[in-house]
Amino acid sequence: MTLKLNRNLTHASRTGYMQLEYNGLRSSIISITQQAGATGESTDYSADGQTTLMQSHTLGDGIPLVIMGDGFLDKDIADGTYDKAMNEAMNYFFNIEPTKSFREYFDVYSVKAVSRYNSFALSSDTTSTATAFGCTFGGGTLITGKDGKCQNYAKKANSQIDLDNTLIIVVLNSPDYAGTCSMYYNEVKTDIPTGVSIAYVPMTDSEIYGGVGFEQVLHHEAIGHGLGKLDDEYYYQSQGTITEAAKSKLQLYQSYGICRNVDIHADVTQTFWKTFSADNRYAKENIGTYEGASTYTKGVYRATETSIMLDNTGVFNAPSREAIYKRIFFIANKGNYVYDYDKFTNYDAVNRTTISRSFH
Image (cartoon, rainbow, N blue to C red; front, side, top):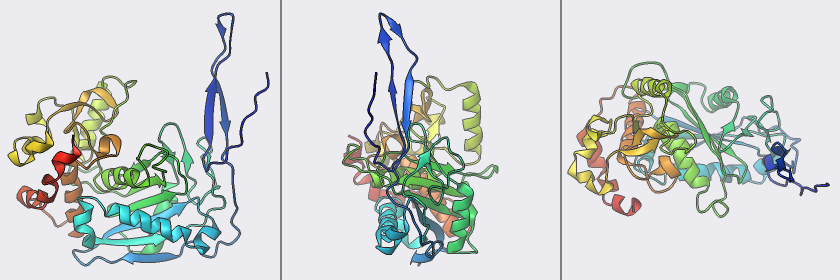
């Protein structure tokens, strides 16, 4: 039998699966992986590492946000494609609450990175030099990259940058649907965590993926995971009930202030969002305990039926907005900050006026 495969013209590797059957006998599953088809190679690296201050803070002490790209060639920088992608990422970051209301607190930098190729290596290639930050597409929505190199490029933007409170967004020059955030944290018992975050976000084509594109993935990965240090609220049927070991690890993470948008308690009065559930102003958001979160179908709960941390659509729910709000003001005040629920809910009125439309 002869198989003819079409050439892979995308910027990422792809894998197909097949199985042979004859007279009731089946072969093992056969996988065929094609590397991405490189469509160009850089020769001019003179722009690599150049930085631009895209926005300066006018309130607080400045929250560092550094945006850089992977899989962009020298010609993409020369013709403005790179800068357009960085500006698009910045605008998406600030077009949704809570970051929309607090844009003036951020210092936004872009750092140019020239990739050798505009295609991404196989996920098994951990030493990839095909692109500036060695990003690869793995199984499902996984993206891996060179976190250390990303942090070094962030320092090019500002040598005095506080990486513990920096969010780095790496924009992948790819239309594919994926996204991963390397969410670092310090092992300190606290309500508001610290630690650098590196959000790997492709320029996902929303027309291909049912309306979920670059914008929505960036909201989930960069604002949700990266800034808010939030957990995923989706779940896989294959995961089943959370194990005791995973439950203990989740509780440990939560003692460090991260992943508090999910909870192991079915009783809403025992959850991290119990105050919201008892606040009549949030009645339209239907805050309760909905089973299925942190990738497990059973034993972990989220606060609302849907949210950005579940399926990338709609809005951030109240517990998520609160976590993002806390980190904004913690960083903007260099840690000299005490959270005030009343001040948060006063701000959050802008979300309560529209929330009912987002959760139907």
